[in-house]
Every structure is written in C-alpha cells, then in structure tokens.
Amino acid sequence: MTEIQTLPTRPIEGQKPGTSGLRKKTAVFRQTPYLENYVQAIFEGIGGIEGQVLVVGGDGRYFNDRAIGVILRMAAAHGAARCIVGRGGLLSTPAASHLIRSRKADGGLILSASHNPGGPEADFGLKYNGPNGGPASESVTEKIFARTRDLQHYLIWSGEAPDISRLGTASLGAMEVEVIDPIGDYADLMARLFDFDAIRGLIAGGFRLRFDAMHAITGPYAQEILERRLGAPAGSVVNGTPLPDFGGGHPDPNPIWAHELMAAMHAPNAPDFGAASDGDGDRNMIVGRGCYVSPSDSLAVLADLAHLAPGYAQGLKGVARSMPTSCAVDRVAEAKGIACYETPTGWKFFGTLLDAGRATLCGEESAGTGSDHVREKDGLWAVLLWLNILAVTGKSVAALMADHWARYGRNYYSRHDYEEVDAAAATALIDDLRARLPELAGARFGALAVARADEFAYDDPVDGSHAAGQGLRVFFENGARVVFRLSGTGTAGATLRVYLESLETDPEKLHQDPQDALAEVIMAADAIAGIAARTGRAAPDVVT
Ligand code: G16
Image (cartoon, rainbow, N blue to C red):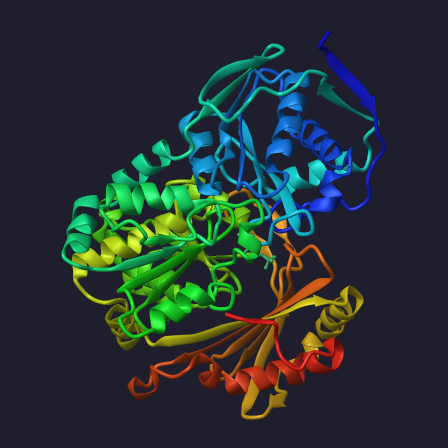
C-alpha cells in the first residue's frame, strides 16, 4: 500500500544556498538523504506547501530526472495540490519563471547548476523560486538554511513518481502531476515582445546567424524560435541536443568556453551574428562578425535601443545592474533621464525593483540580461532583442558598438577569474584587503592613484532589506575601478573574481583590445591584493 512515509534524518553540514540556490558536486546530491533533506528544508522554510501549485523542472543535467522523482514524491507527501512539470523534467530557468507567473503558481523548484559542468563527476544544483517567478530573497534562503540545521525527519510518498516523459495529467496520492510542453508558452511570450516579422525579413534577406546551445537546455527552444518560427536555416542552431553531461563541455557562454563559436565568428565568411547560452538558458553571449560584445556593453546597448522592439516601445521605467557590472549602462540611463540601480551580485536582488515597476531592464557582467517579462535573466530573450534591433536599424553588430562608444564613450571592461584557489588563501586575501581599505586612499600603484576604497553594501529601496559584504571596491582618480569578490556559485575551493574597468572617451582610443586598455588597472589590482603571491597563480584561468 502506498502511503506517506516519515523517515528519520539528521542535519547535514553546509546546505547553505549561495548566489543562486544550493550547488554541490553531483555525487554529494546523490547521497540519500542529501537532496531529501534540502527539499524538506525548502518546504518547511517557506512555511509548508499544503494545497499549493508548484512548477518543477531543470536543465536536464545528469540526475535531473531522478531528483525530480524525489521532489514529486516529497511534494505529494507534503500535501501539494499540483506540480506542473516540463516534459522529460526539462524547463529552462526563464521558461520556469514564466510558467510560475503565467499559471499563477505558488512557486517552483528549479534543478540546475547553471553554467557549471554536468555529469556524475560534475555539479548539480537546486533552488526555490517564489510566486513572482524569481529566486527566493535572502530572507527566505536564510529560513531554508536555518531549517537544514534542525531537521529530524522528511516526508516522502512511498509509491513511484509518474512517468514525466509524456504530456498529460497523472496523480500521485492526492496530488496531480501535470506534464506540459516546456517550449510553446515561452516561444509565444517571445513572439509578443519582439517583432518576429522584422526578424524573419532580416533572415530571409540573407542575414546569417549561429546559435550555440552548448548541448544544454536552450537547444530545443532555439530550434523552435530561431529555425521554425523565424526561418533561420536548419543547422543555424549548433550543439542543439541537450545532453546530461553537456557533451563533456562547460556550458558557460564566454569567449573561453564558447571558443568554437568565437572561432566561427572570427573566421573568413563568418555569420553576421553569433550567440550562445548556458546550461539552464538564462545567460547569453553576443558576438558580431569579428566583434565580441562584453555583457556590460550588451546591457548598455539594449537599454539604449530596447524601444525599437514592440514590447519596450513605451520606453524603460529604469534599469539596474549588479555592482561589479560596468557603468556603461549608467550613462545611457542618465541620457534618458531614467533611474539606474546598483545591486549586489545575484539576480534575486533585481526582483523587488522589477515587481515595484522601478526597473524594466536588468543585467550583469556574468552574461545575464533580462527584463520584467520574467523574474530571471533570459538568454534567448537577449538574443531576440539584439536581432530585433539589428533588423530595425539595418546595422551590423560592429557598427552598433562603434556608434555606442562614439556617443557614450567606452567602458573597457574585463573579469579575471582564479578558479579552485585554496579556500583559506582566498579568504585571507579578501580579509587582509578589507582591513587595508581605509588606508588605500591616496596610495599610488604605477600610474594610478586611489581616490577611495570601500566594501559594497546594499539597502533595497523597495523592501528596506540590507545586504552587507558584497565586494571590495577600489576607485582610482582617473575614474577606473577594480572590484574583488569571491564567487558564490563554485563547488570546489574558492573562485576569486577580479573585475576591471576604465572609461575611455578619446575618439582615437575606442577600438583597443580591452586587456591592453586595462593594463595599468590589471597591474594595480595585483599590487593591491597580491594575487599572484597569495594564489600562486601567474595568470587567471578565465578572462572575460
Ligand atoms: C548566478 C546569479 C547571478 C550571478 C552569477 C555569478 O548566475 O544568478 O546573479 O551574477 O551567478 O555569481 P558568482 O559571481 O557569485 O559566481 P547563474 O547563471 O549561475 O545562475
């Protein structure tokens, strides 16, 4: 007889959500009751799920299917009324956010470790999104974490979870499991926001594009939207089949991990437009022919020209960027006379601004851009907004960038990542630098003099919540800036992120290699923090 089982458990150390949910090695998540404990803590931390409707889906990485089975059985045992699941357990993160909103669900569980590799030896993750479709706020994740430290048991339905490979509704105890097409609703939303006729016309006129889905979740979405609905020739979407290990790749859309796309876009006879997305479909990378667009620049251009797309024809209410993102968008906001908010890293911090109608567009240096159409960043959305702008202006990506820099100046920008650094060494680097911040003003590092230095903290203007310890900032007298922080999404050791920026307005100097333009800032960053000496690394692992 099937029934609700109450199984004893004990708290497990370290189930603390990071920048975006709980991310750990897959092997850790697979050890019963690791996943069960965390799901129990989520259900208890949000105050129970009795009678609720939840959306459940993930990026299809290894263990996605089995984890969904466990989540459904636990949701049934906790008295949920219904779980809406993407067929095969698949939902891109932005599509899940849209589904929560369009179905007026009470929340959702999204299974993803985003851009981290997948597979039995790689990474897995789980996060809870609230009824607005966005990642749970800090106060909710703190409650969830508190529950992980005090668990005595978890509830699970003893029967098997229904087959989720076919559309339709089944029951699990008193709970309904509704399996839906993960793509159609999302593609319809995109068709409402963008001028599909104009984009179709652009493509029919011979404009060539290449979208690299990196064997991750956006493959089927991109095939439906770019190839079927917009008429791009079959094969425009490459690496379009989602695989549990992403084909052994690292589904992070940046010039390092998407080097195949970079090579194609810099080859003779390159397509006009290239783009890539990440494991769960919320990040994007934009490349023109021979022209990589940094995520911070992409945000600024989209903020400047979004009104060319029907969904944003009324203009923007405001924009928001995470603190380490370059200030390029700030000057666009200033020119338009709209508000520009600076938030800590983590999409969850944009939620209140979007809900309150204070911001329409948000973006981050970590390859995320999005708008108030959902409460997550959205990779394909950014690609379609770019295509809409290219179709309306008739310009190339390189020409749009040149126009933008000529008008606003160029914020040369780069992020240097030192991955899997010894955690104690990385923490000591940050702690020591924090202690020295008050003495830095006035110090010189090569040609650069420090104007001021501080640790970023944020007071949310909507709900008044306070977030401290959000990155160490050093501002130079010439307007350049360097930011140091430790990543909250890694699963091994620590990742030190060094964000480098300097503004150039001289028309003769707008087309340099960012690493050359930033050479003095890069040297100053090392001198300030002693990166090479403390990490033992001669060079960063990833340069974006
Ligand atoms: C997540 C967050 C982003 C953040 C990124 C990097 O993205 O949603 O807001 O910018 O991690 O964070 P960190 O610098 O702490 O590693 P994703 O795409 O991984 O879900």
